[in-house]
Length: 267
Image (cartoon, rainbow, N blue to C red; front, side, top):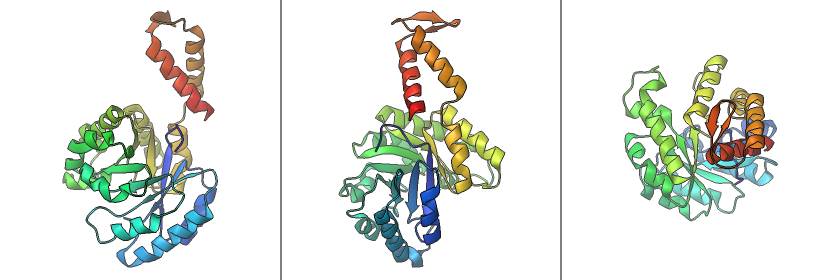
């Protein structure tokens, strides 16, 4: 995968041939072809075949991952077999509660994106992120809310400790971290607010469930014009070590962060 984390990671149902085709025209940084939640049990074989056909045909200019079924399910082994030899950028593993849950997919030799979806996973997240096969963590907040027995519609502030634990684990392990999905497809303002919050919390990007969320997600996780201008001014003013700049103290780490932001803005 490239050095820059994807901002937008769109789930595409593996059993929906039309959605797989239309995804080629979308601006999502990463497509996640879903063999898990989006596919009924009696359509798993169809989804694997459609996924293989779509990936083989290719998605030029896009990073492509596949979410397989979880460890201990009757479907995971067949999913892994179906991925063999495909030009994928990553494999998304759901319900990763411990390092052992990564084992079945290691043989594919692909970067793993581990979904943190249970209380057990929250406590194991640091070890999971430190595994050399893991490229990133994904917050699976719908399942986590269910596991925590939160009432339906509870604001995600109730999971703030768990959300920050995922970000902390990812940063400690030196891997990417991605925010969970936003379920209210028609709530444009709500999505924009949550995406902006995700960036403030330290996430690199956000997982998505609908094409309409792609553009606002990319905007939320991209440097703004003001941020770019501020970073350029800071880099230009830097002389090395601690110094005063525009009324505040800056040092080398601020310069490094500004350079990273500018590199991200250049793509």
